[in-house]
Image 1: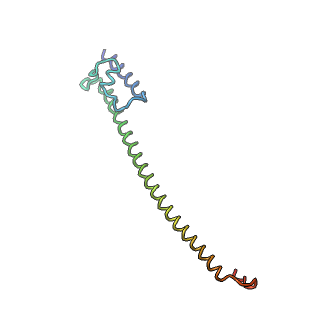
Image 2: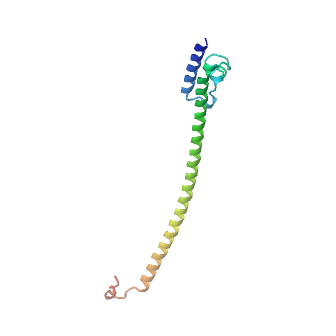
Image 3: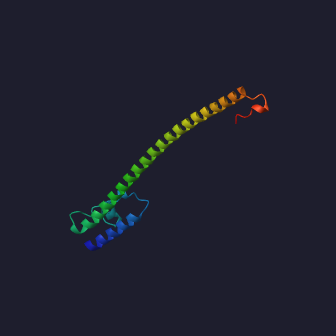
Length: 128
């Protein structure tokens, strides 16, 4: 009977692993036991033939937590990078507007100076 029960638990674990809607952190030995049709305490560490499956369940659960934590860290880094780039963009815009303003002022100054030295006759156009 224990071999049949273990086989049923292994099948239940495989079903649970492939269920994308289920939070992997909720998959425990007792949950697998229940899914297999046994009481929640069927899988026990004290039963040597259950140890491999219990280890697989725990590894599966922990691997997901690490993956979720990794995604959270990557998300936070991405948000931080976006904020940094937005700040850099604003600084670049400010610099661009300052330079544009200076260029417009220079153009206006050049036009004013050109009007001051405007040649009075066509013979004085040798400046260029």
